[in-house]
Length: 476
Ligand code: PHE
Image (cartoon, rainbow, N blue to C red; front, side):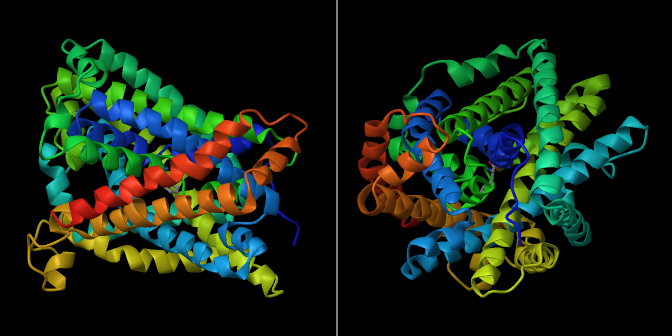
């Protein structure tokens, strides 16, 4: 089989930025920032993106392009001993894609609800801003919209790298930016919006002395968010890097992606926080932000609410879809690598179909436990296992399947993936492996000492911190 490739570097960038920009930016970033002290969170997040995110990004893109394979193929290229890293990537894919598509389904439902309102119909079953709670307890609708979102993801991945992923992302991403800018301008014109900007940008480190959160709490939340938001540690950027032509400038790409991702996270904050401030909604409410708080904002907006609401959820929908396709692609490429090693001719359509079905089944508990609010179609994890409410892990996992899946992926597997890769590059294969790959484009490698130091020391030390904070949290 001929190796698939991106048509252009622009197409690659749109796909990679599309993967990075998703619910993590539009939902996770503003709500975690809201809960973890605003400005203090922002500062730690930015430092982590520069010292860890951009470095791990270059490592993944470099290894992927060097071998031309996905996460499994890449590690096997070095040694059979590393096969577990490949499996870890796919397990992360299962965990993330399942809850991601459940959430994508909810977003799709909101988008359709506002579209219905635009043509004068009642879009939210007469529930107004209580719709979220109502929808969570409608198991059939939850599963239906989950299935729709998974099917859309599958359709694009079946289309292949260039005709599916690249084509969709190259249209969707510019549209996303245009809508986001429009919403930011609209929100900025509303009286009271300024409180939202103040919360984001006014220097304030008081959260560090809050005994419930503290420095470690903010650090852990910012670090997990950074991996997730940049799609790192599970082989996604490795897989996308493997479709990139040798003549493209890897170093530049590895900087543009985190820069774009961070900018869009900040822009999302600049749309959401001031909107909440202007329309009297508390922005530190946590995960309900994207649905409950934002719907309240649109309800309070009056006449324009339906159109802005529709545009907002359409934007979130696009962002989520360009991310979910990249996760399914990791699993598809994993199986393609395995087939090629076995000497079998891989069938992309069949592979992606089988994985999508398997992941869909795996994610059903997330769609059915009403986010652990009790009395739902499926019991929440602690209830199901008969564990004591309030025991170890309870506070951290919130006792719902989504948080369990998310924390295993974002809090454990992705940091381990990034840690092992950095140690292998820094200490065993040596940073030259990345330098040589980058120089194939004909441009000299810039900042060798910085990258070498980060692979060897900074990334491992930051990871140690994350695991420590994770353990403390688990038992608290
Ligand atoms: N980066 C995506 C987001 O922020 C999620 C994602 C994680 C995508 C891992 C691919 C791989 O929403």
